[in-house]
Length: 392
Image (cartoon, rainbow, N blue to C red):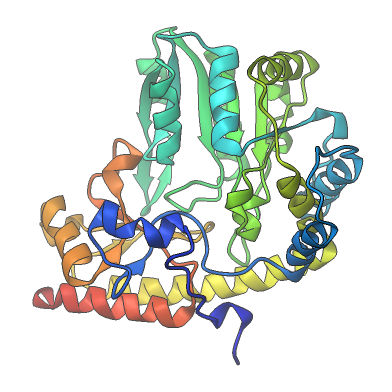
């Protein structure tokens, strides 16, 4: 049975970073290559989002946005319905995307030279923002147990110096695909408490969990951390509308919220009207039904890619519970990163993220975005098997 997600939509020449920058960055031509790197999907958003944008175009006047009460109500409805969390509408601040949101947090609560803790490997933009702000990235490598990532808080405690002021958590985890358990989240919160760290919990992938998995918001897992907690969510990954650059920064503590809002005001930053209209439309019953369908489709793509990748001797995809980003380890091939990358890019003609950009522990990995029509995932799997055929 065909799915709406099986449609192959031409994106080359549309100013798509994913498809129009792949040759510049990875040397893979979009004419015969497959873009599997940057985290956006090759799917259209649900019709409710399209209608919202069309209504704006039909109206034809693009002025300043006012009265965001329906937008805040939609966010609160979604968090309650999908995640069992009831945020206060007044606690919601809206940023120009969540990378901007993290940057603002770094700017608000740290000073140049301060340390910001990352559990690596982790989403590469965190490190870029921290270093660009003149802060130190303090890498706490994740441990691998039973083939998946977890934490080693004893090791992390041992390397803290007192100069650290913040920790940024990725939940669910990108690139490892973990849905952290309540116990693990409580461990992160306790670590932040012990070292008096502001805890920024980036939960942008919280809707993109595989069937049978349940994401737990940090504020529910460890309410005792709320006086140090900054929650970050968005419609952008869930509904494939990253170009609208709209993120929700939800800060339960009034004092922290005031400090963050003042920094936003000082820098004159804020959302755009398109993003607010799109987010309001997306967080609806129609959007929820679309996400349920999407999750089933992504799970099918995950199983297909895992099967094909894991059939290559020495190559192993980390078991994943969330996101649409496969984290594939090539260490068992005995090859240096330059060689397995060459095979993937020059022979298989796949543009994928290099593991080392995610920090310590990522050196032998590549990240594959499989949020694309299934036929394309299957073709990518065939190409990989061909590129490593000598290992069979």
